[in-house]
Amino acid sequence: DLGNAIIEYMKTDLFDYTRENNIYESPSRAGDPAHPELWEPTDIDKTAFEPYFGGLRPLGLDTSELCMMEPTVPFSMEDTSEFFKFTGKLYGIDTAFTEYDRITSLYWADDPVETYTPPGHWMKIAKQQVRKNNFNLAKTAELYCHLGMAEYNAGLAVWKIKYKVNLVRPVTYIREVLKKTDWEPYIETPPFPEYPSGHSGFSGAGSQILTHYFGDNVEFIDSTNLVIALKPRKFKSFKDAAQEAAYSRMYGGIHFEAAIVDGVTVGSCVADNLLKNVKLGSGSGQTVANK
Image (cartoon, rainbow, N blue to C red; front, top):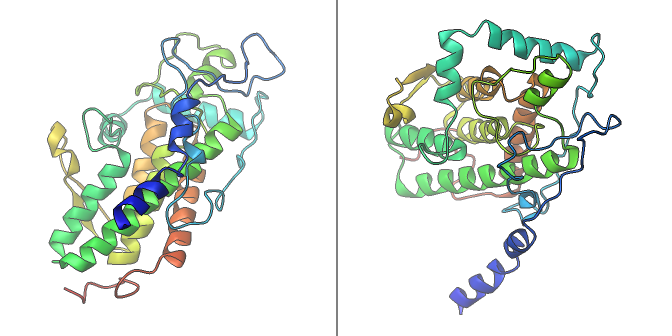
């Protein structure tokens, strides 16, 4: 019957493989001057988080590799390189940390234990817009379906790139190359490679789906983080919010700018391909006429 067929299909999504092969050996960079670009956990108590997640079966797409990227700014330790300049920019933000930077980094941190998580934040924004625009049940289901698949697929794409590129985190680079051995980021560095930014990928995908359903240049107020006593924020558009979410990770000191910019690109690419491949219900959803 249908239920058993779904269960059998679920068994082939490769999730079991990610559990059985959860021991991950990061290519060693410790004491190896030939590979200073390689990531390793920045906390000895933490292991690599979900190193095989990018290999899961995508939803609504034939492959999770449609939007693969290489770093647009190549790794370098030369003080004249663009990579070095990006590091200086990140370090400069930290040394001149403003209240806006601090609150923004916290607003979009979306820690899994305390908040809605990064994909969940975009689901919450969608919920606010559904209520504001009086979407009916069918239209709401279409939106959540597209948004949920886009966030999941963006996660696959980003994680596949992360562990393929395996790029060092800012905290390691700043301590080793800039010789700022006591430097700490404002936000705790998570245990997975630097490039591209996961928050940026989720935000690129989420903003693209919401723009598709509600339109571009739609001003809105996001009250998602009232649950952690952070004031609502006003944005000029969904893509404006995505940019702030993405750059919050640089304010927090855990991503170089290239990972942020390219992460948004990957997420947007995933959402675009999903919208082309998965047609739902009444069509484009560009307006709120179907109430």
